Length: 123
Ligand SMILES: [Zn+2]
View 1: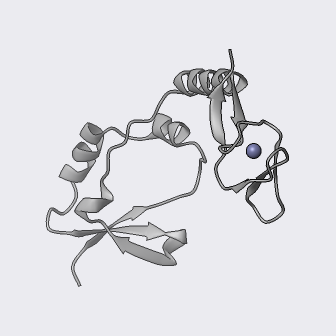
View 2: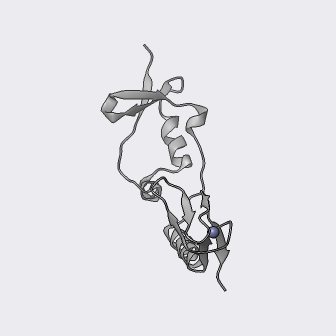
View 3: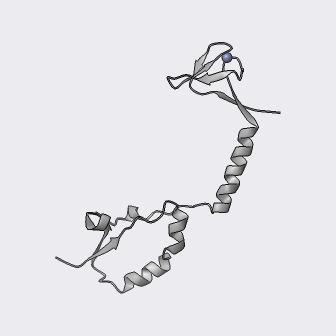
């Protein structure tokens, strides 16, 4: 068998930003890879070597992740927006609606059943 390069995966963080703080950059990864056998296959080594997975092109994905400050600002804006909106019956416009035990909504004013209430902005 030829040499296989194992990328050992560990479970450390629940927030991708925390892991990113301690992660190598692409540039640094390339620098590390330069000194490894260039024809070696690369596999991910999960759960202490209990399972493996091949590194494929699809293994590498870029994603924009908002900073914690951007996230807080977005949530603050969403909560502000939430305060200025109300859910009403799509049939009669009454806000006298409730969730039934079967998972749909019901209007107490016109007795309509619906899955999605209408969102209205409060003045
Ligand atoms: Zn109604």
